[in-house]
Amino acid sequence: MGLVKAKKHLGQHFLTDKKIAEKIVDGLVHTGKYHQVLEVGPGMGILSDILLSRENLEIYLIDIDVESIAFLANKYPQLGNRLISGDFLKLDLTTIFPGKFAVIGNFPYNISSQILFKILEHKDNVVEMVGMFQKEVAERCASKSGTKEYGILSVLIQAYYDIEYLFTVKPGTFNPPPKVNSGVIRLSRNEMETLPCDEKLFWRTVKGGFNQRRKTLRNALSGTIPKDKMDNHPFFNKRAEQLSVEDFITLTQHLTHLTQA
Image 1 (cartoon, one colour):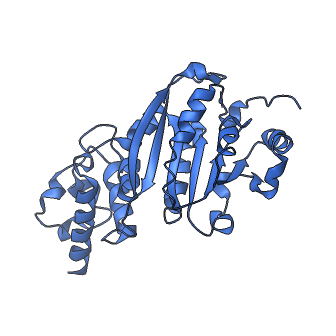
Image 2 (image 1 turned 120 degrees about the vertical axis):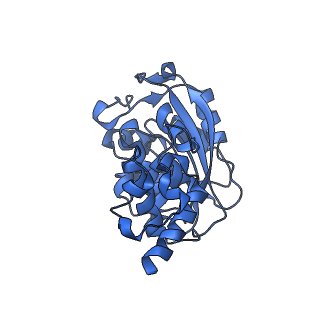
C-alpha cells in the first residue's frame, strides 16, 4: 500500500525523524497509573511503531483521515477495534476508557486549543499527556503569571496538571514542513481531585478576566458579578495576567462569598 498524502485541510504534517519520535514517546513517564494509551492522529505510524513496541501498554489509535486508517489497518492488523476511525474531538472517551489512560500525539495545529479543552473535559481519566503543538501554543500552556503569553489555557491546564515544556522541534523534521517551530509538552495530572472552590465559577472567572485582559478584574468581571457587590479586595484592582492559579482559586472563593452575602 502506498504512502498517505498529507492533507492541508486536516493540518497534517507527518513527522519523519525517528529519533524525535522516540523522544516524544519517551516523554510518557508511565507511573503505573495507567496501561492504556490513545494516540491521536497517528498518520503513517511513526510514533505508533515505538508505542506498540513498549511492553505493558495497550495502544489505541484514532484518526479522522480515512486514508490513514486504511494504511494503519494494513500495517497493524493486530489492533482490530483499537484502531478507531473518527474525530477525537467528538469521541465519547468514557465508552472506550472507563479508567485512567494517557494521550499522545503530534497534534494538528489548527485544533490545538480544542484538543487541550477535550483533555481538560476528561481530566479525571487522562492522567498524562505528551503532545506536540505549535511552539507558541506549547509555550502559552507552560507560561507563568506576569507574562504576555499567560492566558486562559495556561491557568486552566495548570489548575489540574503539572506541565513541562520538553523540547522544540524544527520544521525540517516534517513532511511537508510547517512554517513554524513545534514544541513538545507533558501534562501530568496533579493530586488535586477537585479544586477547593466552585469549579464552574472558577472557569467563568478565568475566561471573563482574560477575555478583557487589558482591564482590571473589577471591570473585566462585571458580567460575572455586579460591580456594586465587589469590595476592596486587592485582586479586583489587578489584571488577569497578574494572578497565579492559586490567586484565581482564592478570588473564586471570595466571589462565592460576595454573591452569597
